[in-house]
Structures are given as structure tokens and as C-alpha cells.
Length: 343
Image (tube, rainbow, N blue to C red; front, side, top):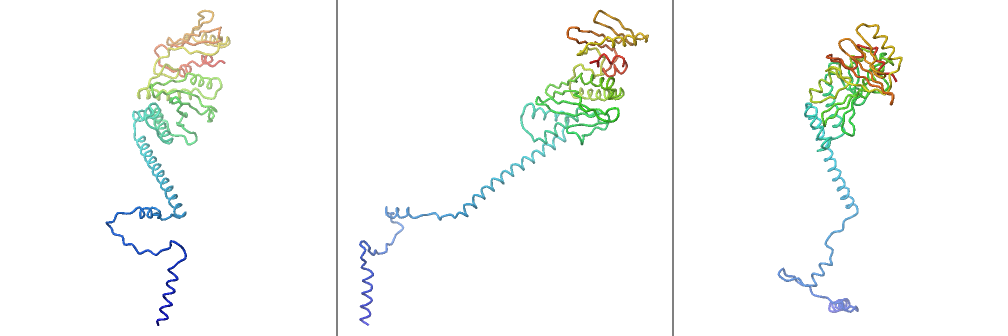
């Protein structure tokens, strides 16, 4: 027994007495909560990593989660904008013309806020409908074939907003064989900012030329167009718009001058002279070398002025107290139409 105990002690001594210098066995230190930390303990603590390392898969997860979060915020923002736009379009549908006009000015003229392209299209659609509302009596509806076009029984009106925030109207009318003219005719310009409307006289002259020279339209079609567009113009005046003198207006007597880019040919003057001489209610007088006066019934007159220098002419029309548009005037005196359409 004693011999075995001695062997154990020898093994223990061999293990403890290491050949490496500085290797000593220290007794376990007991730390107390009230003791101040020593510099050695602080340094030991700092050297010890406190954060558990994150794996690559965890980093990818957090990155994807962050991206998904941003995507969600964008979707919410887009949805909120879409809902706001739908609500605004609902407001537009419920608005009367003064309210629509106010929105037009805030959006296009003052640029107080912006709306979607769909809402802009709706605003322009509702405004143009209100402008030409009398055509409801003739089956007014949006075209399913042409963009931004209103169709009625006798003609179509297309509208477009220019960069200057002017609403341009052009029209097309079925030809006498039921087809449509190849090109639209520019008719009028509406200025919402100033509440002014300009009717293009060239449109009226084109109608006369297409009717009496090219025979695309009939005089009856021209008369219907004039009557229905005058209903539209009267309605627009009630909305507060002002019109300059124009060849389409039949709300007052004609008393204006039409400038033409051509001289009146001698053969045209000769035919008019013959017609007036064959009708006791008409007369034809030569005022001077380049001026002529045509007297019609009801004290109505047409004065022709020739300008030889620039190869042009002008017509001064006076219908006395009779309210007429140029279309209606020449509809009554078709033998005078060549004065306006000679090219």
C-alpha cells in the first residue's frame, strides 16, 4: 500500500515540475462585487469579443428584408397617390363648369398642383363637353374611333390643348357621299385664361370653297353647320366667353371686311355684272378703276376693293339690319361666292 502511494506522488511531482519557465499554478481568485476593477481585469475584458459573429446567410436575410421594406413603402406611396387621383377624378365628374374652369386654371395656368395624365384627359373632356353642350340635341357623344373627338349627327369636333394652354377645336363633316374629308378644318381657339374665343375665318372660307367650288359639301350641310355652331357660340357666351367679329356669327348683322389673298378676276366680275343686270332687285356699280359696289335687296351691299400692288382684294359686307353669318349670306346669294374662293 505504501509503495503504491509513493508511485502516485512521483507522477504528480513530474507533472507539476514543468521544464517551461514561468509556468506556475496560481490559486483561484475570489472576486467580490464591491471591489474596484483593476487595469488588468479591464484589459482582459476588452480583449474578449463581446458580439457573436453573424453568418453570411443572416446578413443576406437582413439585406433582403430591408429591400422588401423599401419596396413596400414605395407600393404604399403609389397606392395612396392612385387613391387620391381616383378621388379627384370623382370630384371632376361631379363638378359644374365654373368648378372645372377653376381646376383648369389652378393646374395649367397657376400650376398649384399636378395630376395624372388620365385626370388631365378627363378634365379636358368634361370642359369641352360643357363648351359644346348644345350639340347634345344632335346626339353628341365621344368618338370610339378618334382620340379627343366629339361626334354629333352632322359633324365631328376634335379638341387639343396647346403648350400655351389654349383649347383648339377642329371639325370634320361627312361629304355629300357620306365619307369624310381627308383633313380636319381648324375652327376656333378657346382661351380659358382670358375667356376669349377666336373663330378662324379661314374655316368659313374653306367651307364655302368645299361647297361651291369642290362640291364636297352641300349648301344644306353648310347651313346646318352654321346654325348648330351658332347655338354653341351663344351657349359659350352665356358661360362668360367673348367673341371677336367673325364670319360664322349670325347673332348680329354683317358689317365687316374680308381680306383675300387674290385679285378678283375679270371674268368673275363679268358674271356677277350679268346676274345683277338680270335681276331688278340688284345693281352693279363701278366706283373707280379698282372699286365696285354690288347693291342687293334689303339695302344689303358688297363693296369690292382691288389692290394691284400686292395682287390682293377685300370685300366689305353689309347686311343692314339682317342678322347673318357669311355662310348664310352666300347661301342667299351663291352667285357672289366666286368672290371668296377664286385662287
